[in-house]
Image (cartoon, rainbow, N blue to C red; front, side, top):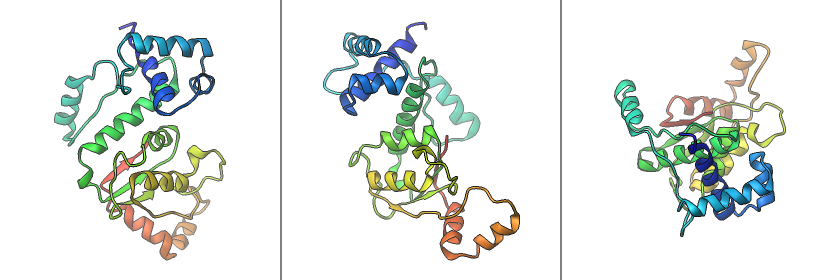
Length: 212
């Protein structure tokens, strides 16, 4: 059990280095560790057979817990990723790739997908490799929350939707409204605007919601 965090982090470092083409210096900043540690993690990835022709996910999937979730909650699918990490960023990346795997199992069942905001959702968008999973132009992506006024990309819901739609070959419907308002009457006024009303109506027909 004690080895799992190092193996999992080694996988994430290899993914960033070999598939995302980040430098070791950039990985060190991304994961909040030193550059020599990145080098050791990449070496560990080779020793463990994680790095071959492509980067594969290490560790043991908790299939028993996945089955329990399916049975107890009546889910159509579940992916449980390892939960012990020294780096929060490593956890976000593995969660994102798990969500992408789950989405890829039944892509034809997705007609409308909503995306929230935050680091985990942003990591999901970054994990989508253009052309790897194409949902098609008949699939529509919509933001699940309006704008916050914060400049960081992880809180830009429209930009998250736009990037995801581009990578997945889908259509984007954007929401030009604030995430929070001071008075409920403002909501009533905003919903009278057709572009905003159309997004609200799309929320009622979501097949998938990606939230952090």
